[in-house]
Image 1 (cartoon, one colour):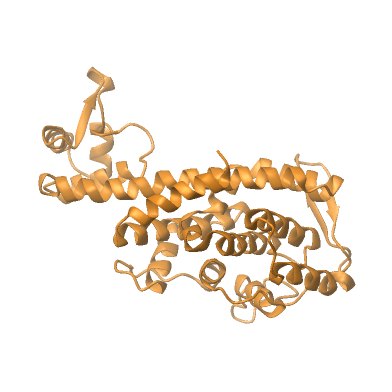
Image 2 (cartoon, helix red, strand yellow):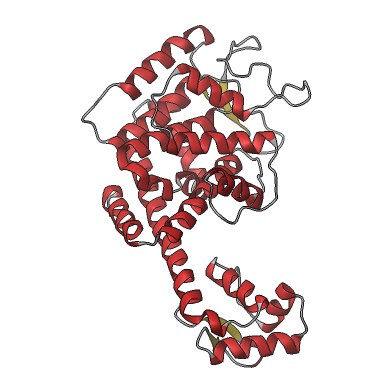
Length: 343
């Protein structure tokens, strides 16, 4: 299915959802975007802390007391700005994004050049990786010289801001690749390139794009992502295959988002229609984990570990959930496990 059609499906489901379910679906997508764009670069953000910050910023109920560090807040700043702010893209806006990614903590600068384009004082900017321990890094591409970065960025910004009849998703793919070819900053280029893609997709698809996490799908397909970038920008300079892959990735991101929104709606319906039958917080906690995609089968042993109760109490809780039509029991003897009844 084409990306536009899949996105249309997502838009239809969002339009039919309740306000509360739309809010929860958006929060999940925003959390995934912030956490996963960092994970692609090997940085781990605490998911619960990111969620609390986003919920608080969107003035939604349920934010906790966790406070994110400055760098995490910077990633969230960029995520929200790209998806929520319709203002034009300018050099100043992009430099501010870079500055937010690398906050100066106690006079310690994480990079030599922050909030400004690179200067190549330490040599040409190369995109490289090491594919095996003990081997020299493999250089994929040498970016444009620093003395041309400002000029190339002005060309890119002009492309972004010039009205066009070209398909918006194709433009997002081109902008993402073009930015990485310039590689204007000392570090943080990948995260800003993905934020720019989100911004372009939001312009093309409207507010519904907030419910779709492109970074989550890119993380899943990370190896292919780098292969396609290398083939397109660092090899032949032919963007055709890159655009095709990018559109396919976005279609798969929309499909994954449909499943997540449906899970949110399903959870609301389950607690609305079976809430009285879930008579304790232990059961509610485990049912929530099942709805969120609990890894592995739910057994009495796992239930006891998750809720910190005895095996007998776990069996009673599970039997009650089965009797009330919330769970169903599968398997025999040592292979007994439990699934949501409508799964």
